[in-house]
Image (cartoon, rainbow over all chains, first blue to last red; front, side, top):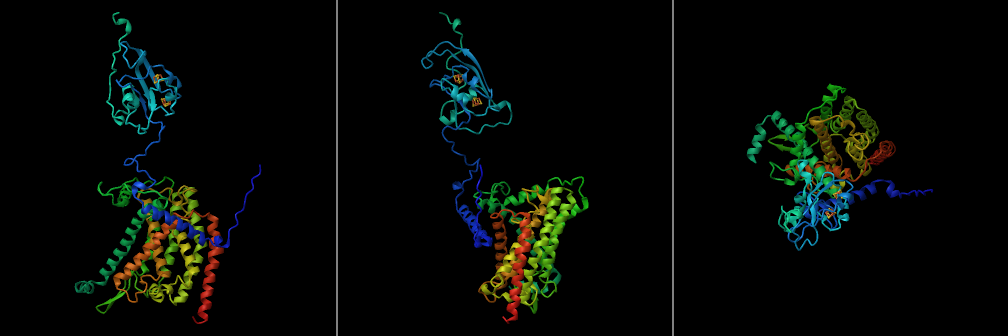
Length: 187
Length: 353
Ligand code: SF4
Ligand code: SF4
């Protein structure tokens, strides 16, 4: 396919080069003046540590493991997310638990450990897509950094509390129901 | 005022001279340092950015990021002074000085204020008194030397990018210097002398009598050549960071680099002073016939700062020319234009204007 190149014919005024330079200078000067009289808060630059960008809905940031009102984890340790994860950074260990309560209905399986290696995670959101229980969400926190590699291994309680402050919820570090194998409960 | 005058009369001429040297060179150098900040903040504003504003004086006062100058200076000062193994060590050491000294020296003849008489003695506000026989030829000659700084820096660092940059600078110099000289010569001709004091006096206090009005083509040529001479965009292909790494700067680090950078800004100041003196009436204050000394100094500094700002402004407006485009511009546009300007004014003078 041929491309027709249109040759731009410059007028004599443009060919003097002086006039276009002046036009260009007026444009840059307008920008200069505009920027000079704009308050810092209104400029395009977001000065990061002082100002933060409002992330749009649907942004894929740090994960949260959802919980019921009583603090029980929603995840049922079905391993769907671990399977879906293209970076292979989720590792789950399931456990049974007895003493079913109201909120958890008929579920009797939950993760004993739920680890995400945030150094390997690519924030693709596949885990969120795969989850049948809506138990794992990617939300708007993008400041995931630490001074050492070990603190980037997020465990179950880290993941359940990632947005506790933002949502005004309590930090929890214990399941509301104990993990007791059912067969040891006396019938 | 009386005390000041008596102080002036009792100080020996040599001390007065030393004071002038300190004021002029110190002033130009600190203005050059401030201009690194102006350049960065100005370019940021032009491009809708913010620019350096986080360095704080003693970690407390941000003062619009002016502390950045001090921070940069300290950083440069404490950096390791590397010399590449194959460099010509002596020339490598000499190059920043060769670039820096001519950039400042051009300032010596330029009067930065009105001469005044006090106690039967005339005091000239220029390092070299008028009538020294060098006049405006001196900054032109010194300006021609500035290319040695670039060339020596390029040659001594023994790096192909540097040498390309140095070669470009020297070849470019040949092509613009003639047009520049012809533009200045037509001023010498209409003035009837090449002493800056005469040139300024002949331009008088009326803005339409300043050389820029009758000699507009000459001014455009001179102004454009000044960009080439100071190695700044749109003619900075001696540096050409997108093409030849950093040109003649490539191998330089720490204080050597900052001296090269400072040389560029001092050169910019000298160039603005030349433009103000030759085409905009030097220290003349518009519409004030016999201005007080301080007002004349302020007027000169204001013009200087304005043209220095125009240098920054143009740099962030125009893209870099191609190397052959300056050749074209120098030989086929500037030279005929300044020649025509010269011939026109010669004709006008022959008609008795
Ligand atoms: S966001 Fe993607 S990479 Fe990260 S844990 Fe979920 S599935 Fe894995
Ligand atoms: S987070 Fe969702 S997908 Fe992953 S194991 Fe728990 S319930 Fe299954």
